[in-house]
Image 1: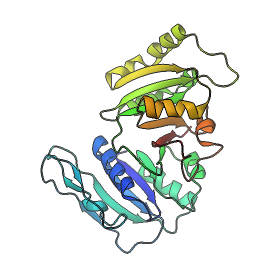
Image 2: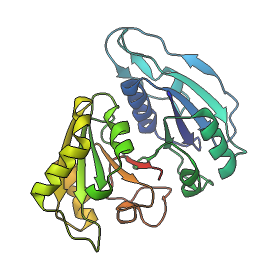
Image 3: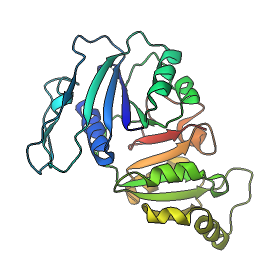
Image 4: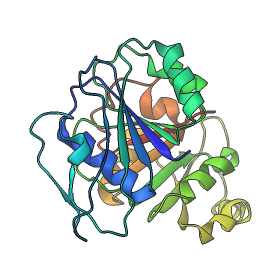
Length: 264
């Protein structure tokens, strides 16, 4: 699980490239680009270390400069190996089979007009899938928020998130409809008992959100608390409030940070 898969329709803006590279660098992962439109050039190249400063080049065209996006990078930083693959003939089942066979750590959807039903894909894979907003204002992920009802918070998700490099993780308890909310003192005790052991891996925090309107919650988390990424579980708990009945091809306009969705 040392590789990221980017699904693209070959019509992606530069910010997707920058974000993918920064995320791969941050977590020491290689990148495979699955191109849903046939491409002539399908090569793998190793990036070259120049010096300790990280700098992004301006792209001459979408994805044409993906392999040499990093102009300067520290010699002690792992340089992602980038491979392109032709996925122009893939349907959902074939994409699922490829993802499962390669055991990817993460799938990033960068396709804007994909014929693939992402919900069908996510339902059958074992790794999380990330959706990107139309405009990314931040390339680095430093503050992640996992939206959950603490009573159903998944330890494997917290464990996986805590292993990402240089991040703060906030578990945000939002009471499920129809259930009584947690008494704050009990919520803090439950969190510490169940997840306190992960505090050694990352800066792990907990909060109880009283606001029920998800648009207001997202606004507070992103614009006031400066969250760089939102996390939820596939079709569970707050998935519907955040994304609707199924994964959209594009994030709702009010969500301006990536959303990471874990399979059930």
